[in-house]
Length: 181
Image (cartoon, rainbow, N blue to C red; front, side, top):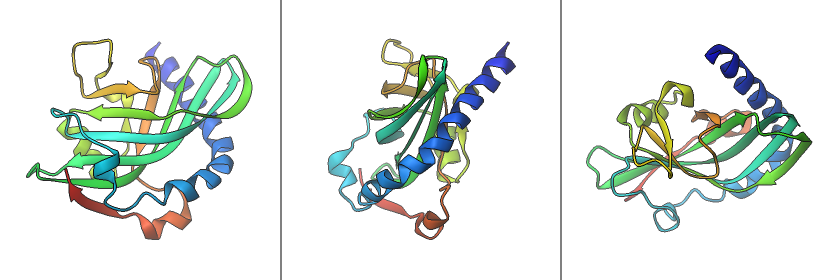
């Protein structure tokens, strides 16, 4: 049963990403403007988190009961010295069975708080993170988990965090900025 759900989530993500790639071109020009040290004033880490994912705007696509979400944003992680943070770009693709029609539209922001050192190390090394490999919690649960959904997704969503740029245009501009936490 888990493999069937995993395949369906991956299918819904794939069905969303294809139309989203066309729509995301306009979004990427706005999103690429946030590359300065302004992250520390716009975004903050919870005290006990070691990383946080911010996706300011997403695109949601539905194909009957399959629904997928795609967005570009930033990963803000604490350095080992905990005095500075690293800011890097990443992409998120998520999916669930909450669709009810055939559509593609803009949707709201997503925030994921990261509490697992393993997740942060993988993302900083350029390795994608798949939600089904970790303990995911939400605001309704007291337990923290490896990743806590703070906004924009439900616990029913499966998701992939991909720190590798999928566009040839971004290969030469995959910067990681160090900022004060």
